[in-house]
Length: 301
Image 1: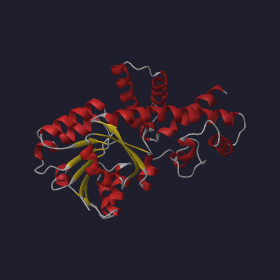
Image 2: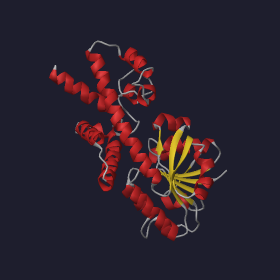
Image 3: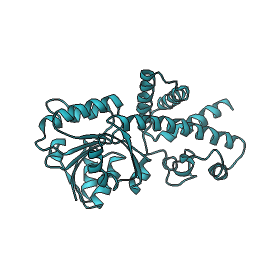
Image 4: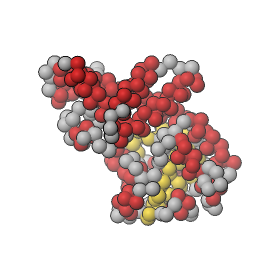
């Protein structure tokens, strides 16, 4: 078993770290939220007072924080982990950040004698709790071989996308598609309701037809079709709308930099941005896009 530092105990980080604790690893965790640390400590993890305190002496450091700036703040500069860690643990960043930032971080880590992987995840809170996430990994073969046994205790599918930054490139492609698919699913659910269709019946039909998709099966935007979906819990928890907007921004930035046409991604960004203007919406699960269609259509009726 390994000594693992886990930095970032949010909606996704908490179940991921919990699975490592259950697998028997010594997990030392840090998060600005004392409540999150207390919950994880109750499962057997050790709460640390700082990222450095969590990471010192670890075999592996896993970071799961909101954005590129947060990742850079953890690792770079005179107070960052690269400058202050005495040992050389394997660094695995599971956050979703810009591919070029991931490449720059890996280069900086390499100059200081560290190996680093970018390993963003997909699957949402439910699959994180089940330990069935998908990992999209960028980095060297030997670093992935070292990390794989630990990643497999948090996920079912481990994909080696290529060199450093490739995991992040794959993730922003995946999340743009997820955003478009969720918005389209919400749109047709409202259309079905307007035609008098029962939401559960329409869902069952589409699940077995050409419109079937992950969200109809596991993360439904219409309330009470799937009891475990965030939509059935007031759109609480899940994957925050603010984070989806951040990821869409990364995808569109990448599209501009690489000359790719992404009209559906741009439209999805506009729709989620519109939904985010309502009070409290940025903290809701991104499936709350459903209520944008409901509100718009109700207003038009």
